[in-house]
Image (cartoon, rainbow, N blue to C red; front, side, top):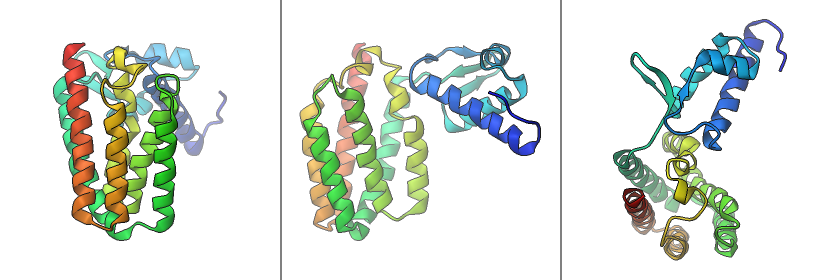
Length: 227
């Protein structure tokens, strides 16, 4: 891709490289633990090393890659402990968002969540797993947005930028199938989240979200340990 010189075009080039690398990571073309060499990436994308270096800094800030002293930059690889921490963070922050959402959510937002829930229930797994995961992401984003709490929304958006999408590539068996034993509990737990929000009950909504995320995290950690 051709970019003219100048500060604005330089930023566009850096962003273009970051977007390409992010897609390669999230879609599994760049694997967990893979080393990212600036010279090779610059050649592959037809750019100089400067925008690649800046793009990698951006992806490091997003948590997609990490700098290993004296060795270079590699795609983040999640450990069991990382997943436990990620789900604990999500349970706490998203639970708070649900508490506030119960007080602020509109009828239109509830209708949208119900629609997303119905579409998830109708998905045939594993054939429509990609669609299911996208609907699930939108469902949880809807809880965050309904909270009207900008800091919580930004925090959750950062978590969801790479998680759980990136996590699947760390567990090949789960990447193409659902997490074992989670299909029916997911549906029931999503329904309870909606019920708590519709009842305008902050404690019920927060508890429902926390139980849902903690249960999903426990199941996923168990699957990782068995892999």
